[in-house]
Length: 519
Image 1 (spheres, rainbow, N blue to C red):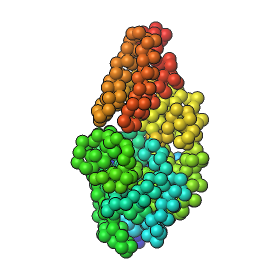
Image 2 (cartoon, rainbow, N blue to C red; image 1 turned 60 degrees about the horizontal axis):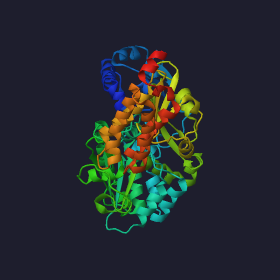
Image 3 (tube, one colour; image 1 turned 135 degrees about the horizontal axis):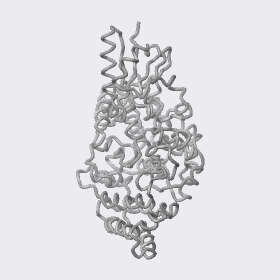
């Protein structure tokens, strides 16, 4: 008789909420009752309000219990949870929950289901199908599949991946590189971390396919230092890949080499910008490079380099396995495929929801996110990290689409969605954008380095009512200067949250004494 399997997440969010203690308690209680069980540590399903969510396999389906604490383990055993019996923490069959059932999981199809370090588990759920197909294709044919898919960079810019691949593939050099930008520093984003902890072999497979496509034989995963669990799992997964010839001098018997290394960053937000990241990888201070030359032609160590966000590379295996046309059927317009939307901030059901582009922002916030966690009225949502636009309730009907969002002064970014209720002060949030920029700027260009500090000062004067009209005009002029004159997106995007707050929440920019009098 096979052991009863119990699935407990090893995801950072779950561990922070006590998943390790819950797993240990389950093992201890099972031993005390002479029960033969197997604990399988998986990634997270992405329903963070239910973490730690433990699951038991009953007749081929998984029944979930969460959020579960160590002290509740005894009552779970007493209630016969190993048989899927009822308990106050039971959520039923996990796949049938509306939050799960309504998703279109392509990238995250295995996350929370498989053992992230089991290659056999990975293959049983479709893993390696993409790289096996890629090995049979010419470089140009692999690139063509990516072009057909319509995949765009998931790191925020939304640049067509096929153009990058084509440029690197066509470049002549004795060495080329694949660099994964896993320096996930935007507020409200955690998809990269989740996929690296929950399905690391997917990222490895995506990078191998990219290497096959553009002729690169070496890769680096640039990982932020704040992700120790991801670092451990990635390094262990690389060893698994090496021992099974997914990495090495002869990838799956193809005769083609690909080697991969994890590089830990030092905590600078600016290193999320690709040229600063490359400087850091080379052992230098993370300063933005001027373009041209483009990294695709002169990147890491001056060689052609394909730089992609983790989710971009994780989309590649599905595309190669199923075809570019199949991927392009998801989404709308020029926004093809799916994106892992991350629901955070003042939201009742925070977590990760993967679905095709075109989903309404309001559906993500209210239907799947459940509205504000406080129960107070919704006020604003910020999309795409600390440099994303603030949007009011009237714009919740917008579809998540690169072009539609751009037309409305916003962006999709990395898919992070941060919700605020009616107690939020958008002038304070605008000031924070300048404060954040001043703290994280690499300092190379004046508009960003000095402009952010001047921005804080101007907003303080507006709040105090000092030369109010003149300073409101000055604020707009300063933002225009930062957009036009900054060397990279750090300074160029800082005005986006500021001016969107001014536009959509003008009442919040009245001087403090005026607002206090009105209250």
